[in-house]
Length: 101
Image: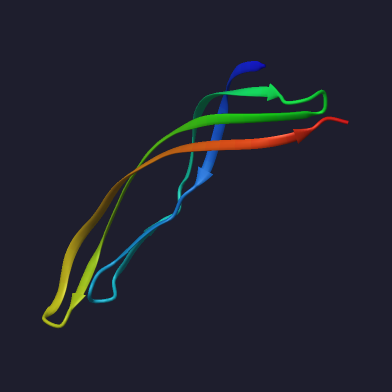
């Protein structure tokens, strides 16, 4: 049996789009990065077969986005500020079965 930890740096692309009832769109596509931490266990079933389970958490942070614009309504144009805050942390679990030659 082998128990281990792992760490590193990860990144991911995100996309966030919001539409209002008048057809106006607010969109952002940031690439976030941050540390990752995880650990796992691997067990030998036989001399050649191994089974493992691994967990990782990516600390990618938050998207804080804002933009100004004009909301077009049937009654006229209204100045507006669109803003969003989205948390982007990712958890992954990996199970594997390995054959060793």
